[in-house]
Amino acid sequence: MSGRLAIIAGMTMSGCGHARPEPVAPAPTKPAVQLAVLPAESDSFPTAARAVSSSLATAKVKGTDETKVSKVSLEVAQLAVECVEPTGACYEAVGRSMSANRLLFARIDGATKRKLKVTVTLYDVDANALLKTAAKLFATETEAARGAAALVDEVTQ
Image 1 (cartoon, rainbow, N blue to C red):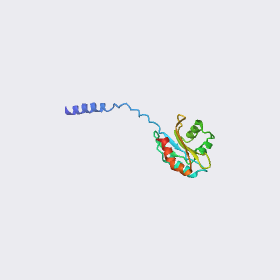
Image 2 (image 1 turned 45 degrees about the vertical axis):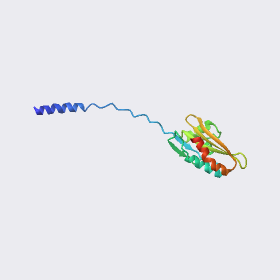
Image 3 (image 1 turned 180 degrees about the vertical axis):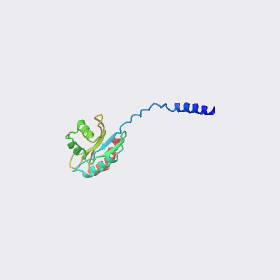
C-alpha cells in the first residue's frame, strides 16, 4: 500500500507544478534626461570664455540624468542646423541635433571695448521653453572670469 500511496502523492505533486504565475509586465522606465552643455566663445574675451565654459562644464542641473559637453559653441551648432537666430526654434533645432532634452550655454557680448555682458541660459528642448536665464554686465574681462561660476550657479540651482 505504501507503493500506491507514493504514486498518488507523486502524481498529485506533479500536477501542482504545471500552473505558472501570470507574467508581470516590467514597470515602464522613464527615459534619461540628457543635458548638452555648449562652451562659450569669444575672440574678444578669450579668458572670460574659458572661465565661463569651465563653469558650464562642471555645473550640476537638477532634473537631468546625463551631461554631454559639446566641443562646439552654440554659434557653431546653430550654423550646423542652419538657424542662427537667438530663438526658441533655433535652440530646439540645436538640442534635437544633439539628442538633448536640455541645453546649457552662455553668450559673451562686448558692450564696449572693455565692458562685456555674459548671459547664461538653461533651455528645455522638449518643451521648447526657456527655463532660466541670467545676465550680468562686467567692467573687465578679469571680473567676468571671476564672476562666471556665480552666474552659472544662478541659472542651474
